[in-house]
Amino acid sequence: MINNRKIGVLIPAYNEEKKIGRTLEEVLKHCRNVVVIDDGSEDRTREEVKKYPVQIISHAKNKGLAEAVRTGLKYMLAEGYEYVIKVDSDSQMEVDKIPSFMKVVHSDPTIEVLSATYNADTPWMIRKDMHIYSFFLNIATKYKTTDILSEYRMYNRKAMKYIVHQSKDEGYGSPLIIIDMMREGYVTKELKGGVSYAKKFIRPFPLDGQLSLRREFVTKVFRYRALRSKIVAILSIAFFVMLLIFNVVTGPKYHSILPKKFLRK
Image 1 (cartoon, rainbow, N blue to C red):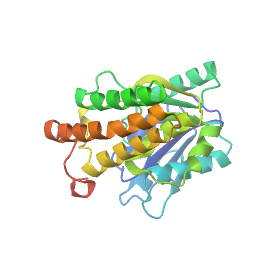
Image 2: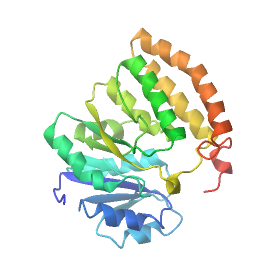
Image 3: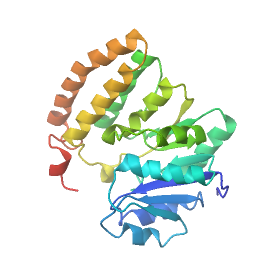
Image 4: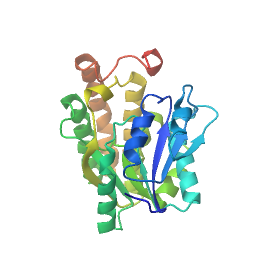
């Protein structure tokens, strides 16, 4: 059980009244310092959170995941936290990994960002995309990653401050901030497993989200100074167009041809 005030868990939540309770029950088994950001939920998310011994901060209206994370990190920086583990509110992230995060960081305090990766049983249609992003990133920057899209991460204070000061809301591309951090020289590492893509968590990825994610990836890789990075970023555009077509045709369960506003919540 983590009861050290220097280590906390941050949980952004939006309309998660049916899942947030279970998530909090599991998280509290491993850490007592929990901060929930209610991002303008229109259901009973806030009322459900109040049933548990956690700190809750509410937005008057929905501001999006990136801003919810910033709000939480600002608060936790002000409270003196040294490390924060960001966990989603829908139980997709296996919180029994929390002790593993701390074990890794204690063994190597130089790590500034530690990311959990997808589980071994992740469907091929999802793993495929992860491998492709990692392949292009490795060629362009020589950084080797497994799951560049994971948002199950631990940040130290330096990394927290970096995220707080990012003014751009990158929407679906927000996990790719890790590419910027690598470019700035942050020490990153991955923790094998911890993110579940079980059937109950799978929702079709909206078309606008797919486009946004690929655009942010290309943009961030292009920002690296090396000519190799810029060439790879440009060449990857054509490949991503073909990948987009392949995904929406062969895997509609995972990749939708419709934008978010037309998909059922």
